[in-house]
Image (cartoon, rainbow, N blue to C red; front, top):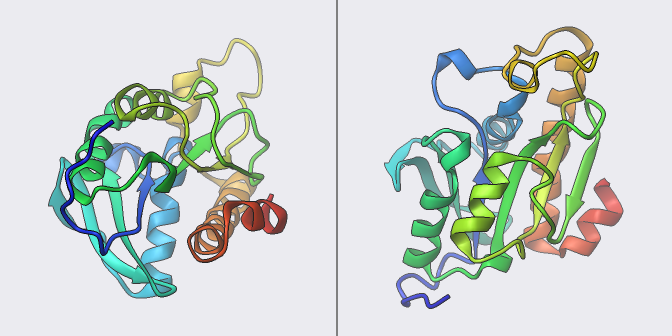
Length: 196
C-alpha cells in the first residue's frame, strides 16, 4: 500500500474500538473506548477532535508522538477511518495499535499479539480488510463469553457491565493502557512478557 508523506512526527496510530452513543456506553463491546477514557485521565488529554469520522487527538505519550483515534462509524465499519489516518500520517500498518474487546478471553484477561486473524471480531475484520492485512499489533481485553449457548452474541457484547465483570474489565483496561505505553516505548515483545 502506498502512502504519501504528510507528517513524519506521528510514529504510532492507536485505535480504540467501540460503538458511539450513550446506548453503547459501559458495554462489553466498548472495552477499547474504556481504555481510551483511562488513558485520557492518565495523561490529562482529550480525544475529542472530530476527524476521519472519529474522535481524535495528537499527543505525546512517553516521548512518542501518537495519533489517538476512536472511530465513530460503529464497530463493523472501523477500517475506513483507520485507513484515512494511515494515509495522512504515512504510518505503516505495523505501527497501528488496536485495542478491542475479546469474547474468547475470560473477563479481565489481557492478550497482546503482534498480528493475527480477526478471531470473529467485526471491528478487527474491517480493519484487516481495508488497511492492507492483519500485520498490526493489538491488545485484546477479555470480556467473557455468554453464560449459555442459547444467549445471542450481539446481546452479550452490547450488555452493560456490572458487578464483578465490570470490576475485572475496568482493571484490565487500566492494564491495557499501561501495555500500550510499553509497546510504543519498548517493544511488542516486552509488552507481551510483562502484560500477557
